[in-house]
View 1 (tube, one colour):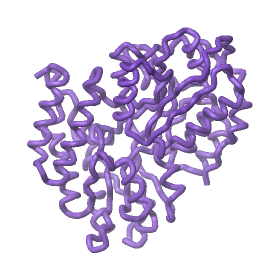
View 2 (cartoon, one colour):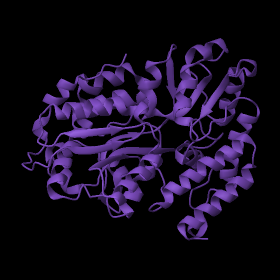
View 3 (cartoon, one colour):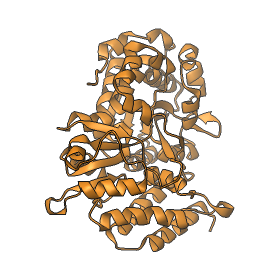
View 4 (cartoon, helix red, strand yellow):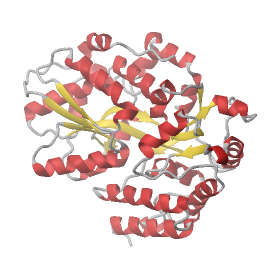
Length: 419
């Protein structure tokens, strides 16, 4: 059972770690998508912060749009002159804000709270740096996880304690768990962008960037990864879900027992477990047979867009509340993410006892990982959108893996100017 820290506790603990700012900038506007996945804990953190009666409270705007959609909306707000003070991002959409010149470096902000800064994991901080500068205040870093319906496993004669470790084992388990007549599938793999694909690509011996700086997604490894996924769909072991509906459908299908294994971000842990009528087990992401597993670290954080000095100071103070030990403990318990604050891990009442009670989560966070590749500027938004569309074409059989990945590779080269 996950025990959340109360808002009152967050509001009254570790405030001494935050700097005192005298500026009064009025209400701050913070924007975030993916409300259903992690909005509740974000609300709790900023409600607790507002409970400390800051001169500039946070007004949090949440919707369930993807990060790409949220980025498009915020970039339009910037053009319209209605720029929010901060926006939540993942690594996939950080660069557009940095390359546009609107993201404000946060190194000085973090330095204003030296005691708090000393508690943060330096390696995880690097996930939020571009060209050596910190451009997002960390909220959490999440890795892929294989969510398992233990009841379905047992009915199929499978052992949840022995999850599939490679592609062959994953397909074999999916075959036993699938029931075409009753519209039940063995597995559903993350689809809308390159988060899962990139790790699978690396494990298969490929890379996003190939020889001469050109796209590597259309190489043999990329075709193999897509071909494997297409095979699962073709055999009836996995549904093909369109990019536009994946965010809502993936969780719903898993919770309803329509898919027995869900390969997705560990950040969906609490929302998936809380609404499931069965016990959920977690396992690392299966890799290509005989290959070393590689996962992508998706950093979730907030970019500061405020440029007025008073609003920058007020926004800084609000963003620092995300990385206190208590806020990090609350976030990890809600998202199964890697803890950015090491003090939270050391304290039994925060995360120490929690990890003892949930050893699966500790295993997930020890997976080998690397930073998620992003194209520069606005090019990444367009590339990720094209990726989702082409992947869906491949999975549904509208195009072959070879032809689809060749087309995606050409699009990537066009966007980066390397063709």
